[in-house]
Length: 317
Ligand SMILES: NCc1[nH]cc(CCC(=O)O)c1CC(=O)O
Image 1 (tube, rainbow, N blue to C red):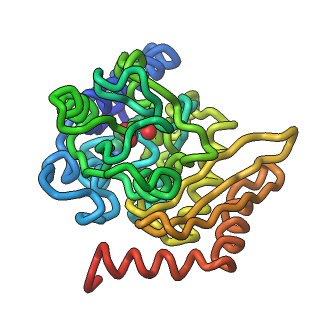
Image 2: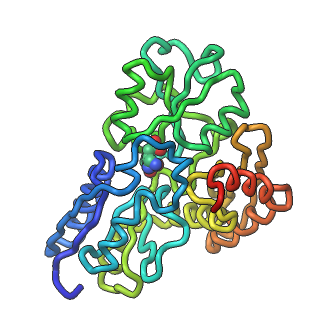
Image 3: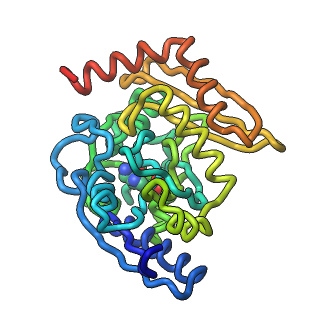
């Protein structure tokens, strides 16, 4: 780097700050001579809280302001929840590294009055809070007797709404709860046979300027190769299906010896149609696995399902 200061752009939600502080601490440990500054800011996604995420539908809702800081050279890196980072980045920026993933599963969090119940035993009409079409479609598919209601705001705000009785339960990323020290609120991890997680869920993505070799070298210590391979396969699948974070697309990945196995699903919002399949290949070429799986699901009709969703969620665009 030109100077020995690394400037980090971050969202200012509690979860974003926990994640950014973790990145700062890891980088300071690896590079004791480095001065690290954090600039925290609100993004569009933090400001527009009265509209369903699926209706805003815009890619980069939680990332654009941070990217702008790097493009005008007011920040060197941006720390994101990888699942919020679009699969196509603005010209001049790259995904510099992917950190070790927490458990990528979704978690059920219940209102106190349901503490004896599970997702499978919640009574008819129970209100599930989620703002994710992916969670909505998959849970509707398996549990058509439940009622789904949008919930916005950061993780803490959502939990407050749950505790106030607005919902019977919430579906949240286990990783976010764990990082916030709220792991005790995880009532049940949702099995991948019921609901696949979001692309990149549970990992952090560090974005930087392309060709900024000194910065790339600095952040390289945070790269976790197995996580990166899994997430690159997942992102290639999503990119190839042209979906942003606001489409009912879910994934799961695991290694079998030197192979990486990617499972993916595409569903209609009503949960009636749900396509799911797997592809495997050498772990050294994760993007090829994502592309292959996208081709497989497209041949089964994924394109039509996604076209319908784009037409209803974003009319006119
Ligand atoms: N879009 C919100 C968001 N972005 C990242 C996380 C959780 C942490 C992660 O998945 O890495 C969450 C909250 C949630 O989905 O419960």
